[in-house]
Amino acid sequence: MGNATAKQAPPLLHLFKYAIFEFKMAQKKLFRFGQIKTFKNVLEYPENIKGNWHNFFGNKNPIELELACGRGEYTIGLAAIHLNKNFIGVDIKGNRMYIGAKKALQHNLQNAAFLRTQIEMLDNYFSPGEVDNIWITFPDPQLRTSKAKKRLTHPRFLRLYQKILKPGGSIHLKTDSPQLYTFTLLVIEKYGLQLLKKSGNVYAVKHPPELAIKTFYESLDIAQSKKIHYLQFCLPKTISHIDNELQEILKQTENNAIVT
Image 1 (cartoon, rainbow, N blue to C red):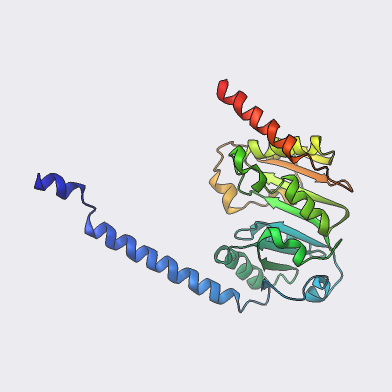
Image 2: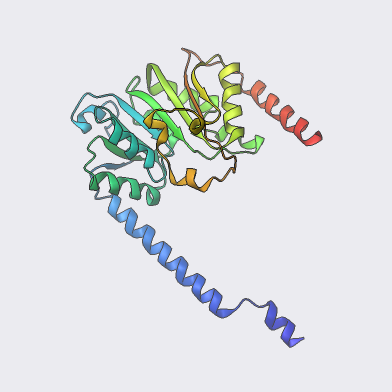
């Protein structure tokens, strides 16, 4: 009986190693948070930046955003391709943002910057029409129907983007999630959005260099779909408030899938 108890108890060595690992990770995060405060290309909850981004960059070039930018691979990738445009990666996780911001500084990409804030607060930092285009690359697909409102292509977010996008500005979605891809196509249809480009498998056809940029999350292939989906679309002047109807469609689709 004593032996059985001993086998069930977690090995002390394992617990010690785990504690050391957690301590090192915490120290690493603290270091990175401290570093980004010194980076000239990172702004954390800035004041008086709304309407002044062209002054920040020192030019009047178009401004594009990457939302939930994570490590910022797309932000710096786009900035390297389009030196005549300004790119801003937006995320709340400064620990990840540190990686992209540091690379941008190392490569002297003066047209790349990072904004640390919640996406829900975008209109606090950008004036109407200040943003030309928005990129959403490999966001959390929020697969549960009950979490649909957290999807970055849900109409509640599209209404937010509409407040800051220039008329005619477009939204780019790149994802490995077939569910998010299908959901966004449904939103485009139901809300009368203008679909500009659509690809169910980006790498199966000739694609522009912007779509060849690969992120850390793409390499993980979390969805295991083996395909990368892409959509580009524009928003209408007004976005209908039929979100309850959309939710019912999603619930019905989910129920049918369960029955099947």
